[in-house]
Amino acid sequence: MKKIALFADVQNIYYTTRQHYARQFNYRKLWQKISEQGQIITATAYAIDRGDQQQLKFQDALKHIGFQVKLKPYIQRSDGSAKGDWDVGIAIDIMETAETVDTVILLSGDGDFDLLLNRISNKYAVCTEVYGVAALTAQSLIDAASVWHPIDETLLL
Image 1: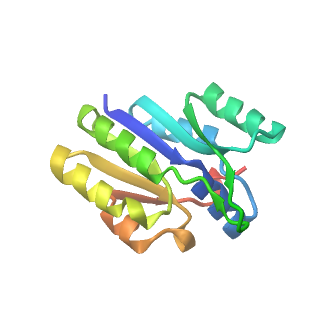
Image 2: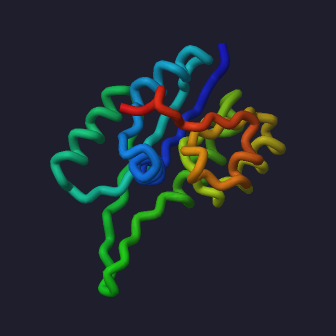
Image 3: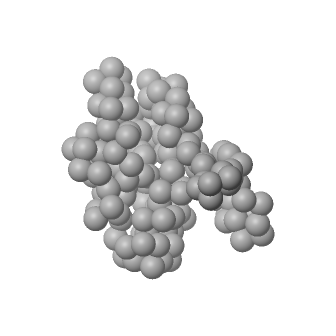
């Protein structure tokens, strides 16, 4: 049975599905779909913690599905901009996991991950799959993935 590691860039998926479809992503349906491909060895969702009730319910739902939820505090800068980026944390976790699985699945449209996917594919001969909103996913990320899955209506709430 194929061993799978799943990594979800929650902020990216939230904002891209909201912007393009005005709907939310269905993590449970994704879990069911991926489970049919093999055994999910590890699944991590990376999110920003604002501490509000709706977010806490969402995080609990992710945990119930099977995700480990990693949180960073939401930081509001004095100039009004916000910070809450998980790119380095996601990259470290993927690098540490890639040699122990057959497939790494990333939910993100962020082109910064293209180098990472190329590296783990070449170094560990691991299959890399990406789920992202087609119109809002970097072409370099799509090209770096072994398999590209555009998020469509079937994966939305």
